Image (cartoon, rainbow, N blue to C red; front, top):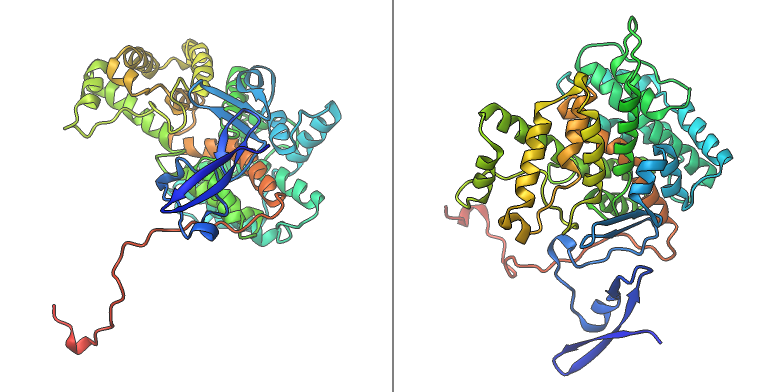
Length: 430
């Protein structure tokens, strides 16, 4: 028998079913609330609102758990590849050897962008933020591949999926080349997603770049860390825009725009700027911790705390371990790592932060790894977008295949003027 929740409004009692997820997450199904009661809920930031039922990603923020399709993230980081993880998110299961080979080659074959788009990219200012370039170029794909909409056959959507995963890295690398005034490096049709991206970034017509295998491995891991994260701001944006049934490319562009913000994907850039500030000051990290605790000071520690996690972000723990290994190498050692380690240790032993459950999040160490690879700071959020692409597409696919899906349309509580008459210009007084 289905459990119910009761709502009492005045003399009336209303009953709503309780939905229980596979991990025992419980939700009161209030879909008939307004029709039955004339009331809505008010939930700023949607902190208590479930927008959908999903089989893709599970998070337990209190226990620091993150799983893709049921598989713990640390297992995927240790044993999987970005392309295999993408297949898992998109299809609900790990691929067979044949399936993995096919999607790997499909993505490798789709890396080129149309010539008209290359010309379009070259018309951006050289100092344009790469997220502005990425969002514009992904949206432009809708003009070249107009058939990719809800209701398209599975082959069309599958091809578009491979194309998006492929060209996101190409556009990112091309935007970097444009920003430094160098020629574009064409993507390779050979498998090796992360290696191919680094070659497009750092090779030139007269210089072949051979990525360090440890850096390739680190990049693969970072992309897996970012591949999906449940109903965050950007995934919810993809679903909300996608619910109006535009092109897949338009829905993904909405996700890119949401990710750009410093409260979402831009946070790792803020961490690097903070670490550089501490290094430049010559002061110990403790001085900046005191500043963060001072309510009269506007300084905030970046990279600590998370909307969902009230424990150590599992992604941060994995990234920290590989970061420590990579940055011990003489060729890429970084004084900012020492500052980060000291800062983390002091925060984790400070009652102020312990009581507020402010632990390192995914952004705290990821920027150090990107910096070690030679990725410029303003490209960090673009790397996040490359990793998140399969998750966005998986969220879109799940949404459009949900029976009875409705266009997203939040309500509001109006607090403005009551009915007011129009005043002719000659009667208005300033």
